[in-house]
Image (cartoon, rainbow, N blue to C red):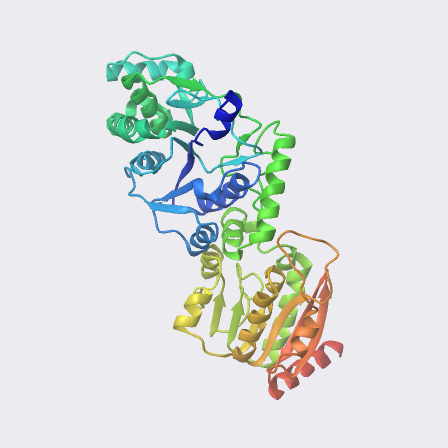
Length: 465
């Protein structure tokens, strides 16, 4: 067998990519886009990803992990004084036959594959920012620890660590944990750089163990660190990373493809309402569009005072928050949206769809479903939503959606069939009355009873008069 044949038959050494997730909306959103680019331009096999979490996974993230068959591992928080140190818990995991463990901060995205093929040291990474913390602080830390400070190039940035799997479990993990706790008890040594306790603790551990550290080549164009700065569409903010250029274009294109193919309303809207609450659900819930919808709602409620209202997909409740009704219920898949909505109408009830089905489920006089249908990725999701809401409306369903393919395309909107066609086929709808068009969407009152039909025509006649 020649040299070439031997290379072909050499066992493939498995690398595991692992991350640690904290319980914040920013972390969950970052994980979703990190995964999009890891599986895309990063070229990582989903079977080689391990997601550690210190709190139960939200339903949308759990579904995302199950869809891609990711391994998930629950870990205990390392210490309440430092969420950053939770990553140390990853060293306790059994990574099976993996030879190498790559720990990555999820506030990063890939534009290409990591150059790991030439590594032969037990530890590798990129050098930390020399000012974070500065060398004068680090000398004081090492002096207090009784250790000689190594070459500054071996002080690794916490965004990416590459470890030999056995060393990670048997040596690095225990000593990293020791020095992190030692530093937390002496946090004053780090002065205003206390957030770097995990990073400095690892350097102490590597110095104590005499571990060889190999510097990775410049990764600035391969692994982009965005520090949680995602725009309203869950792409990396163009201003978050200086001089990223084509690398950022590649990463964001991968994120958009991933969202369009695997879009989950819960993840998207939790990010939107947590990070960009001023935007609401978009132009349809602000400005003239908002004023027009409120006008129609006001007209309907003025002709039927005291009606009960169910706002399905209520978002931040901007459309319905001024309604003069006490029996109001808002339902949304986004817990962040419900948090905002609850602050605007504490007299209303707010539930997720699962909670509504389990705890409520009763019909209301008027059901709202405004600009929710356009975000349903599959036809069956779109149709099911309308058919489940129809029986809940005693008078009618105020609903907005596409009557034709939209002129402006988005990776988070879909057109399945004209809304008027869907409404016409619904057995609970006696008449679908178009009220207005705004942009690419049409607002309908879908009467579900003769009383509802009469109400809609009274409102229409009053507006014409």
